[in-house]
Picture 1 (cartoon, one colour):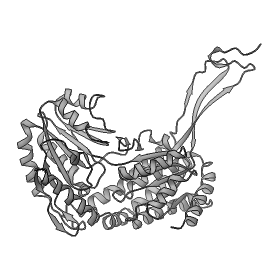
Picture 2 (cartoon, rainbow, N blue to C red):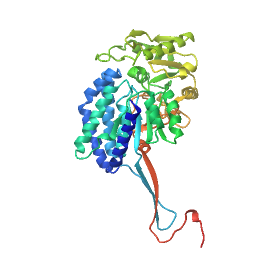
Picture 3 (spheres, helix red, strand yellow):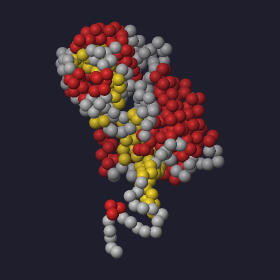
Picture 4 (tube, one colour):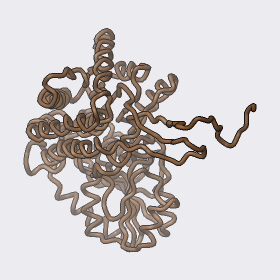
Length: 457
């Protein structure tokens, strides 16, 4: 994309947003409702594009589009719930309240692994809050992007046929240079960026240098603690999906397994048996459970990580290269934590460690730079409550007896530390897409000052 084309796209978004902000929020919600209908009609087409470009198996591709549909439903309800606050003033004949207003233009950068859902998280909230969106998609998923844009354009035309809001969603194509333009552009009121921690480290200072707002969803190095009090059958099911779903290419993929020594052998034996039964192959085949990695560079990264593990003397199960970017998921038995285990390799590698005391498990769990998703499997209420307390997991997502991935849209999604600190999707994540005004109204005829200050006569 040329810089002139980029500049024109931003200006179109600015012009459209000025009018969109004046549309009542419930009316904006109606457009989102129609968008949800359009996505339902296009669900199979968008899923096919996700399978082709992001290489997901059909069940996961359909589930991703369903997540976008669910996000539309959430945003429709939200359009009547953009609540502010009223507070008692300490001054007589005064009222004090807070209200939320649209930010302006929101920049959205999405990654290849969730080309539809992450856009929907940001787009639905941005639009219902009265903003325009400039979307820089992954260069690997152009067809998914165009189908989503088509659904939005059709929704706008159907719900507001006599008004021109075609320019509310702008697509900007390109590589990291375009991302840097967005980061540097003072007209971008909020930059929501999903990708690697390295990407976040590159973009965040650029946004901060202009005192801009950023919402970062970056890497994860997610762990599961399996207690001696765990239901192992339940845990194994969660481990397999968490570790190999999307071929290990989720930010919430299970990458570390921390197991109590008393159940380690039993769990690992059953887990290896489950891994042996996994069908690795063409993502378009109905029997396939593990599809290809996104490209050869991802295969090489996995190969290099396993080679490093082998050099350290760790036991490796699986990890075979099957050709055409297909790999068998790997289990690596680790004697003690090391830099390799603390890094995120975007591939289906599961590192397995052991512990004696539950406090040790929490320490092992938290001893990585990332802080996205976490889980514990235990039927002991004390362990469950400790893990979810301020002394437990330091992640943004903390689960008990479910795996680290597959978050519902109703809760805010995001993590701490190197994961970036952003929150998207549900709960009150919408507040990041708006600016807050604290309003004081004096309806009396005197001018008392706060804190009882007396100034002059």
